[in-house]
Image (cartoon, rainbow, N blue to C red; front, top):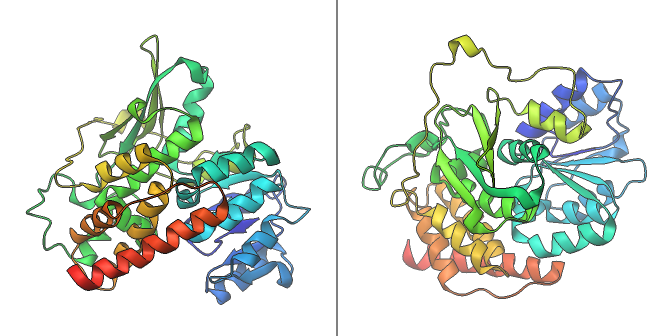
Length: 363
């Protein structure tokens, strides 16, 4: 089942399944509002009309689909915090969650972990970085890990100072040099908050401390992440940027597909370069580290405030550099603890309310 089938991840997942019909059967599809494309997808893959629905903001549809008896794997490609109910329902039902919706794990980490442990479900990451770590960890036990290194392309503004970024346009921010993604995640990549969210996600997925998670800028986007082990060995996963590789692995894990996505031409691969992220120009990265270390509702607050700020930027209400400023102000207003799903929902609601208030009073 694919939640978010008409988006970037969803359409690429169907592309993978299209050439592996003997291995995968699509039994349900959901979309946000694109009814026409959803209908075409349902027709092509033989999904009954009642199981191909536009969910919009109705989390009940996502939960219902995730709990279907004949579903083994749920690909959660819903954009933003709206994916949390489906994440919880999938794990509660003891199914495999192919997770492309990082916000649900980030915002509700402790709650998601509790449901996963009690329900018997498993999470296989779809993000290219976490899929890379997942693959690298096959080379050693988690107790042998020294650190995880997440790579970042640097986005469209790599190398530019904070002063240079004051007047960047929406079009410039949406012009990612490597990946073709939806607008929200593309803006997140431009601010590096996406990488910060991935730091929190790596902590939740792999159980390593924040001191063991490092971010490096790697403009070529060939090395998708690395794991350094205690004996000094570093294992990396390399491929050309192609999301169909981690999607295919998440659908069929631990087995790999027999079709290559992102194969490298080693003769033409001239260089692999790395550099430290510019934390002055991209303060959102440190905001995410701070929220992760604070724990409780801080990651949910970070995620919710960021969604409001990104939407405001895309609507022309604020400047690009104001995105991180708004998130920082909301975090400074304080956070609390979470133990149940309702606590996560409340933290998200409060964060969005505060972000709107900051927008109206300070920007």
